[in-house]
Image (cartoon, rainbow, N blue to C red; front, side):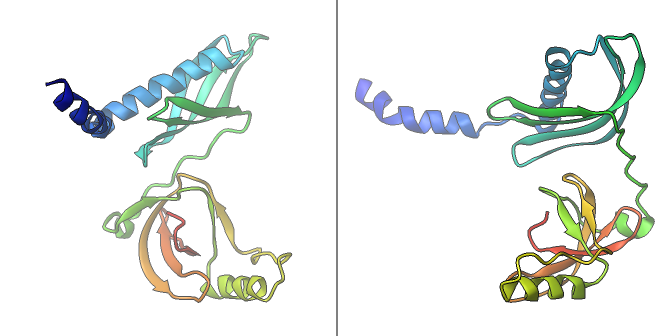
Length: 194
């Protein structure tokens, strides 16, 4: 009997690690860890959540971006931006507050509500035309590593809600996909941005 238990132990441990909390429970646990981080790691005397910009669970990470009203050590009441990521398996929290508040995500147009929704995984540049990406890729492929993307391109923060892909253009070094933002703006990003 001991031999059977010894043989099954690794499989039982592996099975136990596969059993995971529900997304709703992950959000609840992640939110509690973020609140605790504010208490433990900042000098704020009190805080109240003013607005959640986004909150989601993806790939074993809980992500929260919110604006929070806080009372400072000087008894000033101010609103700060709060960004928090919780790595659910380890429970590690990576967070920061910023004196700049976050802008609300725009309301989704009816057109994009019907499309597949994604979140930008690590931050990415989005360009209004695929030609900006092709010009950049050609320069890098030829060895010009000091080249920049067109100034008409914009930075999409990690967690930005995007819809699509609408279309894909293959390229030797990396494919490019067209996506839409919540407000209907079309941009091209590198494949793998979400």
